[in-house]
Length: 206
Image 1 (spheres, rainbow, N blue to C red):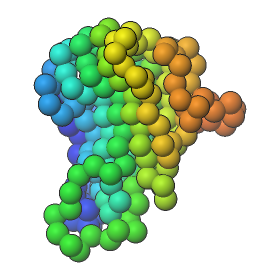
Image 2 (image 1 turned 180 degrees about the vertical axis):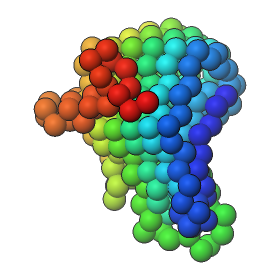
Image 3 (image 1 turned 90 degrees about the vertical axis):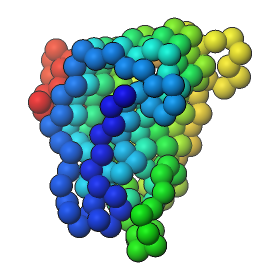
Image 4 (image 1 turned 120 degrees about the vertical axis):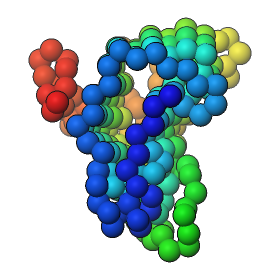
């Protein structure tokens, strides 16, 4: 498994060293607990400008997950994840706004994290239980969550393929059909989603 982090609450904010300009390519990941690829939840210094491509995930609880909580501050933004194969994964995508504890009682509960401009594209999955669970923060919703060319074969026992709250995004060519929160028709939403990509669909930032 891989986890990207950048500091914990007020200590990460004070240290101010973001995790940025990261390229992950051609890896096979498996995690029977937790996530195979995780961002956070200790992300108070910020995480940005990350390109992940050609990812193979199998026999795992959660495929790709973004984690944060009130009091973290910081941001997770400008993330592109492309060309992913999943097999036997309970939850393909996750984004949690109430994840993780605090090192002490000195954190600022008004330090709200920002999760913005996340692109997930060219993903196929077999034997998936939950396609996606996106639960943002009411005071700081997750925005510009972008899904493109995603096809997940969800098990017939799945009663809820998508779970969404306090999230806004754009999607195209996604199966199964995502929740309405991820189907914005605004041109600004689609522009924010794909402004990081060049004409070849690759990251323009790395």
